[in-house]
Length: 351
Image (tube, rainbow, N blue to C red):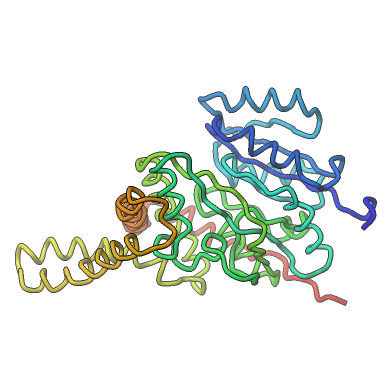
């Protein structure tokens, strides 16, 4: 296809404290096989306290106008996306995190599928990686069905249409037609937007051979904080889009609620408390069996760490969701604003 027929693509990168990975993330975009004069990057720095901003400034000097460094005073992804959509000149928009790297053909493949009309948004599979035993185990957990359930863009599978996908390429006009990202959602804003995108009549295609490298958290504390936020902000997303509710969204919170019930019953009605322990025993047995028998483990140390990592993910998510239910009356104004916001313009029929 002639270059004059190709759209300008803008990659919007909301980042904060990504000094370890930001250079490889930006250069994975710079090194795309897409025409360089049709590809630009907007890096929104969320007031980083490490060397992220310094590194990006160096990259701006190295690569010139292809990279623009902007401020993100609210330090959130949805603010960066809304601001990016206001200032970008690109016809196609891709969001990318600062701890991710794209394969060289990512932009060209996504644009080709958009132009062909195969789908209205196109993304790839997120392949978690880690440097060290614990980060590698975290990456394994975040790519396993035991860890994240049937999250297709994480666990892979065949090419298919999906409810949501990370780091997809969208037409800017369609993004703006669907509406702004909800800035209340510090996490899960992309999930919520993609649900709204589909409800407006658009389709989202996942191409698993487009493998995006995602560098996992390096500590259990950071992982727990991440999943605590995932759980906390999942409730308002599901209230807005109840038809997308699935067991994997609710089970961790149910287990937290049952755990509280078990503690109470063990004190006042030990028999029923012991009976309610059975699901936990089965869960732990399944978790250890998966860890010991899985062919994806790199070493015995990874097998030993896997149950700890998955427990940290599930318990943190469940606590976050449970806490979100408790805090619902205090956040009702923002959540009501989400619930009653417009659903976006419906997709026009193809001629």
